[in-house]
Image 1: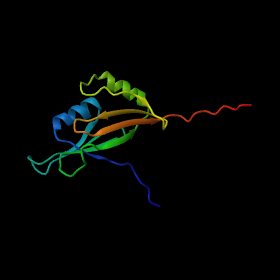
Image 2: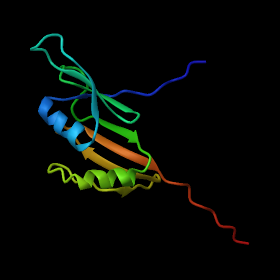
Image 3: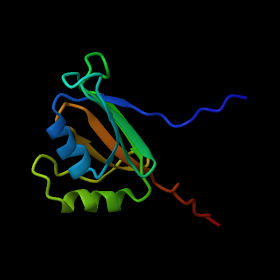
Image 4: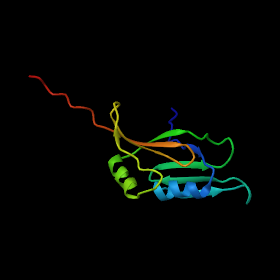
Length: 130
């Protein structure tokens, strides 16, 4: 039987320096690879942090500005503290508890894409009225 694996979103970017400042400097990803067809061609790059891999592309048609992706995180509160501690001038995300029982931190990149880091909250305990 087929088994699906992890997804790798492709997000559109327009400026390498801004992408590096946000994804590497602020979010803590590392470059896995960079590819250009020639020196004057758009960049296609893979970045990763822990088990999360994203691809960023300057190519027209790769992704659409304004995309929104969700990334599962173990201990989203610790990620929130890490991000706030960096005092990044373009984002000071909050930590939100949602009605669908997740804790979430949402940040927007310089190109209009949004990334929501989330952690499922434990199910509420049911008390026995007896």
